Image (cartoon, rainbow, N blue to C red; front, side):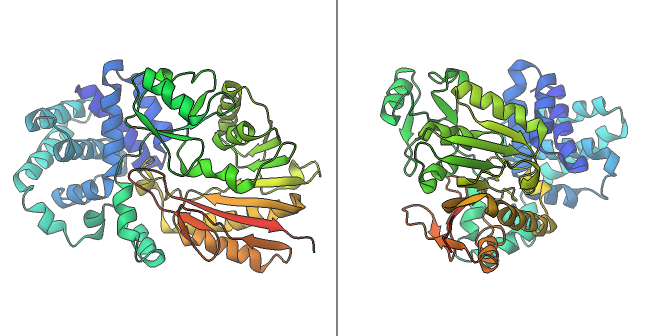
Length: 433
């Protein structure tokens, strides 16, 4: 692995540390500057460092005499990258230390080479004793922010340690098969012919899980819309919506369009997809174009229907609400670095407002599926309960299924190392009175 690759990894991590940017924004920029042959290693460094950030951060803080300044977060990023390599990769130790020291020269700060060398060599000398020294620190012990540990322990006392363990695993690559083209069995045969090992998902009627990730270009008919990359948990939404041809459906908070496309694959619908962020609209259009499907796409705030709604009620609404994404940490490990306890309160207010504002757009007798990729009750069943307490013409419909765990309102999926992400669903029906 070259020194520029390590420094590019440090810069991507610095963007998360210093500017609270996401890997979705910083990693593509780093990959564009890396040599093609080293892009896979760059991704591994960045994702791995973020995945183990709480533990690596605890180690680094133990070894540093004083915290680095905010403007020196690229140097701190290099220290974290080096610690990740030493702890979790098979790179020879001397190559890691030397590589990180050499990479620091790209920062233009001569003092940083000695600091990085000293920290990494101190780790090598103390690596047998450090675990005992740090074992009483919750963030080191469980590799998650302490606030999240506390919430999960409170919300799910019987499940919280399993949730944390699952978050640290790499998620499988799962496909949604477009059954306008092929059944799951037919597509599995196509994968087998292409020497791609896969199996049908346990709960989704459209899902296929690959034994190992691969480039989408290698998937049969991907460019023609035969399959899409989508975790099994969000694939369950159409079953809960009870879709039939001719229905008018709203997909609120729709980008990047995975569920929009899935709705249209399942039935002949009139779909309106609303998305707040203009920068994500392009991806939504691209997904629909590849699938050769059409929807009315509107860039607007779903919580302000007076700005975009034409007054015609919807038969079904899918509200996949903005959330903490604590159910998909294994796919987005930077969540460990970005989220805070204060975010949950703000998100809960937004989620309740979306439910309240979208409810008038639903037809009497119609149903809304409220969904999040969160595992926190504060964003899930408690939101639904608060909504129902203030809405006389809303009725909660229990979900009877083989998947997830029933709650007072709705059903909760926890991240499964061998299957789906963490996800929540609730069905709300608009009554006639």
